[in-house]
Length: 160
Length: 160
DNA sequence: TCCGGGTATCTTGACGTCAAGATAAATCAG
DNA sequence: CTGATTTATCTTGACGTCAAGATACCCGGA
Image 1 (tube, protein in one colour):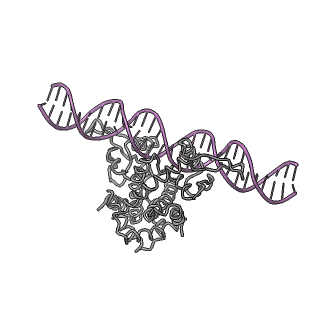
Image 2 (image 1 turned 45 degrees about the horizontal axis):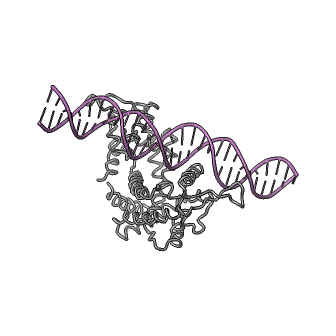
Image 3 (image 1 turned 90 degrees about the horizontal axis):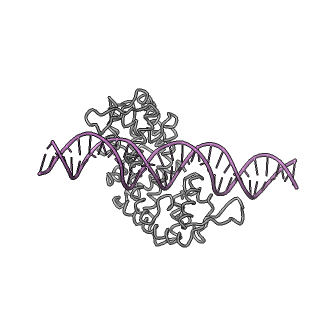
C-alpha cells in the first residue's frame, strides 16, 4: 500500500465507475521521475549547473570536437522550444561556458561553441552525474534493471 | 537504436571511461514522462485545467464529501512547496473552482473547499483524463503493464 | 533580377515553480 | 500567565518554460 495505492483506493470509493489501473502506472512513473529529478539536480548544483544547462553542455560535449553545434541542432536534441533554447544559451554565454560564433555558411544562424571553461565544467559534471545515476538505480537488481530498460524502450517507441 | 541509444553511443565514443547503462534507463524514463505529460496536459486543457490545477481539484474530489481540505493536506498530497500551493489555490479561487473558508478550529489556517462549479469541472475532467490515460498505456500488453507497474512500485519505494 | 515562401533564431508576455523568509496563531514549559 | 518555540500559511524575487509572433536571411522560380 504505497502512496499511489492510497490515491487509487480513494478514487475507487468516490468514483467506482472509473478504471484507475492506468492512473496507477502513470502516477508511479510521474512520482518516480520527480524524485529522480531532484536527486539529479542536487548533484548538478554542486557543479554550478542544473538540468537545463547541463543538457546543453552535455549535448555539445558528446558531439565531439570541436564541440560546436547550431541552436537548431541543440533544439532537436533536447525536447524544448526555440524560446527556451535561446534563454538557455543566453545564460550559459553569460556564465562564460559557451560562446556564439558567426555561422560562415548561413548568416541567419549562429554556432554555439563550448569554451575551454565550459568543457572543463561539463566533463567534471558528467563524471559526477553518471556516478550519481548509478547510485540512483543501485536498488534495482541487474535483471530488474534490464527488464525496466526493455519495457521503457518499447513504451517510449510509441512516442518517438 | 532509439534516440537514447544514439546519445549513449556518443558518450561511449567521447568518454569511454563512463558506464552509461544507468544513464540510458533514466534517460528513457525522463523522455517518456515528458511525452506522457504533454498528452495528459492536452486533455486537461480541453477542460480548462492543467496538471497543477487538476492535481488540487482531484485531491479535493477524491477526499470525498464535503470536498474540503486544508492547504497543508493538499501540500502533503502533491510534491510541491507551500508557495506553489498558495499560488495554485489563488488561481483556482480566481476561477471560482474553490473557495477559502475560515478554519473554525485554527485561526492560523483556512479550509479549501470545492465549489459546485469546481466539482462539476473536476468530475468531467477526471472522466476524460482516465480515458486518456488508458489510451496512453494501450500499447502495453497486460502482462507488460503489470510488470512495469511492479518494477515502478519497487523503485519508487526507495524514495517514499 | 526580384519576389515569395521557407528557414533559423530571437523576442515578448504569461505561467508555474522554488527557496527563503515573513506573519500570525497555537502550544508548551515553567 | 508569560515567554519561547513550533506550526500553518502566505509573500517575495528569481528562474525556466512555453506559445505566438517578429526579424533576418536563404533559395528557387519567373
